Each structure stands twice: as C-alpha cells, then as structure tokens.
Amino acid sequence: MSMNNHSIILLITLFFLLIFALINGLFWMAEQHFSKEQEGDRMRRFALAERLIHHRSGNFDAELRQLMITPSSLSPDFLRSHGKNMAEFPFGQMLRYNGKVYFVKYLPPRFPFPPPPPMFDHVLPPSMGDFSPIVLEDLKKESSISVWSVMITIDILVLLFFAFILKKLTPLHRLKNAIINFKEGDTHLDVPIEGKDEISQITHEFNHALEKIASMKEARSLFLRNILHELKTPIMKGSLTSDCLEPSKDQERLKRIFNRMDYLLGEFSKMERFSSGEININAREYRFVDILDHTCDILMCDKKNITIKGEESALIINVDFELFAIALKNLLDNALKYSNTKPTLIILSKAIEICSVGEPLSEENRHFSKPFNRTYESSMTGLGLGLYITDSILQKHGYALEYHYASGVNCFRIVLN
Image: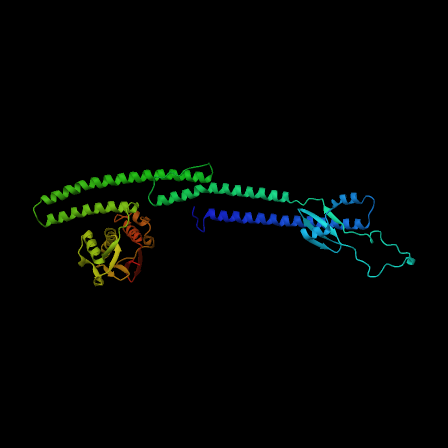
C-alpha cells in the first residue's frame, strides 16, 4: 500500500509510533526509578546491618533476618574477583554475583601505635583483635517483573488497537482506487463492503451512485446512437437525391451541405466520446497551415475571410489533427459570428491568437471549464459549448486557452508551451 506525505494512514501510523515510543520511554523511566528505589532500600538495610555488627547481641542472626539479610559463606576475595562492583561505602562494598547482592564489610582501621600498657586499665573492643571480614547476603529478591508485565501488556494492547484501526481504514484505500478507476471511465465497479461503520456506509453510497451513473450513461449513449441513426438516414437520402440532380451550382451546393452535415454528425459522435473519456488523443506532428485549411473546410468559409499573419512561419505542432481542428473551428466560428470585421489569426512560435472586434465577454463567460452558464441557458443563439469544448481539447493536449480584451478587441490565445 503506497502512501503519500498527506495520507491519513501514514499520519495515524506516525501518531501510533510516537505514542508507542512515549509509553515505552515512560516505562523505562519508571523501571529506572524502581531500580534506584530498590538500591536505596538495600543500602539502608546494609547500613543498619553494619551497625548491628558492632553492637551484637544474642539474637544477632534474627535481627539480620528482620532486615532481610543473612551472613554468607562466600569469601570477600572470591566476590571481589568474580562479582560485579555495585557501590562503595566508607564501611564496606556492595557486589553482585550470580544474580544475588552481597555486602563485604571493610576491616576496621588499625591503631598506628602499639596498644596502651595495662596500667591504663584500657579494655580493647572484643572484636578488635580477632576480627575477620564479614560477608552479608541480601535475601530480598530484586524484581521488576510487575513493571515489565504492565509495559508488555500495554504495548500489546496499543499494537492490537493500531491493527484494528488499520483494518478499519483499509476500505478507504480500496475506495480511493475505485474513484481513480471511475475517473478513468470504469463505471461498472463494486467496492466490497465490510461492517456497518461510516466508511462502510460511504462505500455503499458510492456503489449506489456508480449504478445510477452507469445507468444514466447507458441511457445517454442509447439516446445519442438513436439520434445519430435517425439523422443519418435523411442525410444519406438527401445526398443520394442531390447526386441524381442535373449538374449545376445548386446541385454542388446541396452536395456540400449534405456532406457537411454528415461530417458534423461524425464530429458530434466523436465529441460525445471525447467528453465522456472514451477517446484518447492521437497526437502527431502537423503543419499548422494544413490544420487551418481543414478548419476552413469544416466552416465552409474561404481563408480570404480571415486575416492571417505569420503564415510563412511554417509552424509545426504536435496534436490530434481532427480534434485540434474542431477547437480552432470553434474559436474562428465565434470570431466570424460576433464581429462585423474580418477576424485576425496570428501565428507565433509558441502561441496562436484569434482576435476580433466586438463586445467583451462577460466575466461569467470567461470560465471555460463550465459547459453552461445562466447567460446561455436562455439564449437562442447557442448553448455556450464551443469554448468549453475548445478548452477541454486544449487541456488534453497539454495546451492552455487564454482570453484578454483591449481597445475593443477580443483576443483568444492558444498557448502551445
């Protein structure tokens, strides 16, 4: 599943990673605090045990056990060589060996001078002369299992919740792909529906909308096919009838009219398939003057009715010949229809301009991306499809349609690059 920088799934994944890291960081801090608490408690108990050593009584072992400490049979030298030093005190050393914690009491300091003579009647401490180092073992087990158990449990719950969220969001990815396929023209889609949440409801409504669109599209195609078929029959009969007439100027004119009507029917069919996304651009390199000649043939007008500038430039453009000719035809047709003077066509290296004298387009009509508007809806001269179709064809070619008005002149500009 590919994800972009703005994907909801990516953002949720990053959020869960942040929460996961934060939770584990907090538990690590709690475990460190717990370990320090245990170490502090152990140090206090060993300090109390060190005092008991200097003030022994008959129940010395029992008092040590109350502190969860007991004498050990291990020697100090063995622990120092094999154990891990944990802490140093003025009165001893704490070491870890084989998972247990031991305390080795240091020897008391010796007098720098010989003991005083008996005449001073001084009594040595009973343990001073025959002292041997004492090793104490901590009986209190060091355990952070509870902390780790809680941390692992919460981690598992967070991961399960993350997996649940991802599973719930997976239909969004399928829905996005379905919408992309729908944009490409596939209206016969059926996105799987799982569950009864909002995403499932949206998917259900999307499937229902696709069914209606497919039905409407099929009805429209059937209607257009019938219209084209019904119109083609009388046009064919009229063309055959004109062929049977005696050769004359009227007969030639009738043949041209019926041929033009037959051509327009084919163009209407092509434009319907183009607007519905059923036809693709078949671009090749053509001379612009050849496309212009074909456009004039479609308009049934003479090139003398148009002022052409830059015709000698031999401009080569990469276009679909028929579709680009239709786009150019719509612009020239408007220029001829709404101007009392000859329109001007200017051929430049990176653009083509069609200029004509007349009233400026209203602001509403300058939005070529809309096929209809309120101005054209009640118009008897046209439906405003020409500029919309032209703009759509140019966009398919990667070109742009621009408009500006200055000094009473309307100028449409086809930007080639």
